[in-house]
Image (cartoon, rainbow, N blue to C red):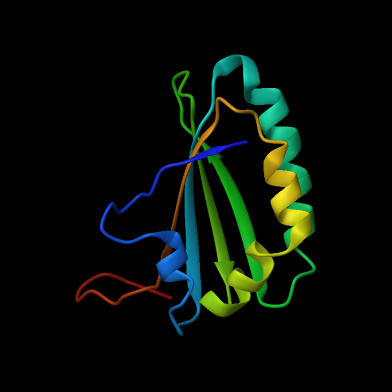
Length: 122
């Protein structure tokens, strides 16, 4: 099973899932061994297909670090933390995560958009 390392040591993903806020962005950093990349991409694709029909799912993107990096970033938009929590707790998702290679490290964290003066935000 994938190893989960909190992105913010002071706040767990579980605690974030109790927040009543939306929309939210799930940023999820994956560190994958080079020899596991193809299998990771296969499992990631299947997992994303599972999320797409879930209530509150808006979009997902996967990014791969350049220059031979072993780092991937997943960017997923949900209508709310509640919607993500419902999808995250589905048995199908839990079983698909069990298929992720044991050498993969995942760091998920929920964010909300903020406006910063002088910066264009949509």
